[in-house]
Image (tube, rainbow, N blue to C red; front, side):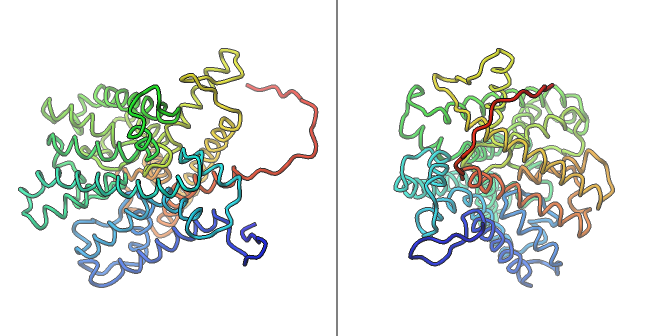
Length: 444
């Protein structure tokens, strides 16, 4: 039911539907602002405005226009606000729904939010929201200050500071929007850019509950299971993807092959950090080897952390899937990790999220192939990038017609709103009145 009635109150919309409507309202409002004559350097169509707004709200970064050249300072500011609202949306809106908007969130929904945000009460959720905004502001200001050391000497004080702030916000929210037509390729060998931007996107992708846990506990043994899995999983993925990218692209003349030794190392690190969520790039992704492209597709599907600004199925989901597979081959019925046991409900939730993700990707790619002819690998890359809200592209985003754009916008929207909405739905339990005898199904 989309409408719920509570005793003594007027009917209210269910939280999942409210979440969808909030995001849709932000897209419509943003598109209207971007369509204003003084928001762009030249006339743009409604499809351009809606696509850009959708990409910004879903913090994806796919672009059909050049953000730095086709939008004025006002238009760029609108995009930045949409990125900020969209990046914080999954956390802040969930907490606002629970604590400030007066919606009838049931006990099971509270359990899901408490588990997802790693808190113990609604009061903690409100406190966490305030801390989130402080952390976001601090990180973005520090990042902007450091990036200004690079951009101000190149572009002057006014434009340089704006470029620094814009890229800091875009990086922390894992959006991938850049004011440069070639993203950050012009800074492929710059140490500050290659340290600050990945640091912002990694911190934003870890999730705020991890940041709060690390800040409060300070000791590894006192960290929550979620924090331990996120930290170990993120570090492992970063190390593995950096080495793999370097090995597979080292001699490719269109990517790393033409760069000096030091720049090759920086580029391998940067691409490894950005491929799971961020959407920035310092090399041409359309020129990657097919083996590297497959690795990037895998990393995009995995994504970032829960309660973060990133997308994908989440690092913890991937880890639990891996642990469940290992447990099966070892003939174990439980999953034990870091001295804790994962319950059946968590495993079932992970399986449901994964199945929904795979089904959405296959359906989205199928529909896209119906409406748009092109290279299969390019279209698959675009589909995964849109759903995982990564924003990386092999250069075909601007080639889509209206039907293709609608499909990509729908995939981006589902990828951003879908995980939390599914979480709310999974948190709803209905009592079972009948228990059936156990049966056997032959699998594999």
